[in-house]
Each structure stands twice: as structure tokens, then as C-alpha cells.
Image (cartoon, rainbow, N blue to C red):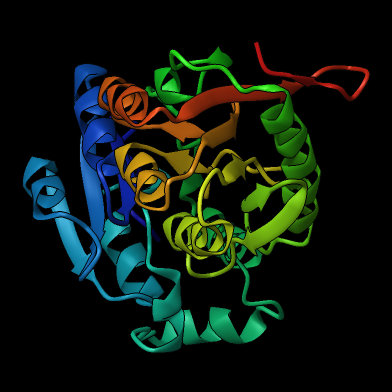
Length: 283
């Protein structure tokens, strides 16, 4: 029989980036004790140091993860941060629990993998909560965030990109496309958003438009789209023109620095949403 859970404890299954650390700070302010599963080669050391308890694992060590949470009496957890997706082909070292689950997953895609892990955790009595718990202020705001606004031509590209990004999201391929003159230049796959921007930008030469949206039926427990300072720097490196992100459905990190950098580069940053009649709102 597993130990009685402590309602004050909350777990984090942490990848890379600043999201896990921001969550720890917010959870501590809310009076929670934070127990972290940190992934070797992904999770920052600062996250481990800020945690009340930490266990370092390799990708696929699901049994070790569950055992540690049970030892620490964790009944709730969140998925936070990035995992380099290409590592599932070279760096995954599953334990018996991980192998068993992996063999049951037909499609090795984000949603299928994460939902399978979440279901296994909940069977073990560990509830998976929304990743935005305590941090909803990080959701991407609506409207134009920069000094420059999208012009008529860029608005057409945003609308075109929105339709195509929605389509690839529905297939669980990615969440981002790069377009110019209503042509798709790059589609996000396992390599991630920054690599997609560089691929598409190289073809565009300049003035590329990046559109990033949630997947239809996006599960707020994991894999929310995210942008930040590095996104703008990637766009700047290929002389891109616009970053359009679905408002309220994705994360925005380093907001002030990101907008400052975009303004210096003359890049448009806009939070977009869909109205009831299907038209896009960009103001």
C-alpha cells in the first residue's frame, strides 16, 4: 500500500528552460513543498537547487520517477519545461516501467506520449495538473505588443499561416509555420520552433512571418506553445518580420526583454485570436 499523500506537496516533472524555476518560486509563495524530477542533460541545476527534494533521472525512467514521488508523498504534479525531442531516438534509457509503457504507445508523438505518461501517473494516484497553475500571467496577451503593427500584406500572411499551423497541429506534427507571400516555407516538426524559423528564414531571405498556435484540443497539462527572447533572436538572425502567436493559449517568457529586442529589430509581435465568425483578431 502506498503512503498517504501530503496535500502540501507538489511534484514537477522538469525539462529545460526557466519554466520549472518560475513555478517553484510561485509554488513556494503559495505555501507548497516542491518535489522535482530533473532530467539529466535537460533540467538546469538552479531548478534542482531551488527544489525541496530532487531526483535526477534519464529519459524513460518512469518507474524511478513514480517511486520517488511515492517516497516523497506527492499526490499532484505538473509537466514543465522543454525536452529535446530528438533525444527519444538516441538518449532514452527506459526502465522496466518505461519500456512497458513505450511498447503500448502506437504513435510516438507528443500528445500520445504525454497523455500515456499522465494516465499511468494517475493510475498510481498522482494527479497531473495544468502547467499554468500559479503562472497564468505568463500566457501570451492579445493584441500588438510592439511599436510596429502588421501591415496589410503581413496580415494576409498571418491569416494564411494560422490556417496551416492549425492543420499541422491537428495532425500532432507541430505548432508553428514560417510563411512569406502566402507560401509555407517551413513547418515545425521534431526539431522545434527555433530550428523551424531558421529553415524558413533561409528560404525567405527576409520578411518571413512566423505563426505559432495551440493544437486543436490542446491539453493545458503539457506541451503548451512557448516563445521568448530566443525566438526573437532566431527571427532577427534571418531578418524576419513578424511573430504572431495565439493569445491566451501559449506561454511568453522574458516579456519586457523580448519586446525591447523586437522593437530594436523592427519585428512585429502580435497576439492573435479567433472570433466566433472565424475571423482573426489582431488588435
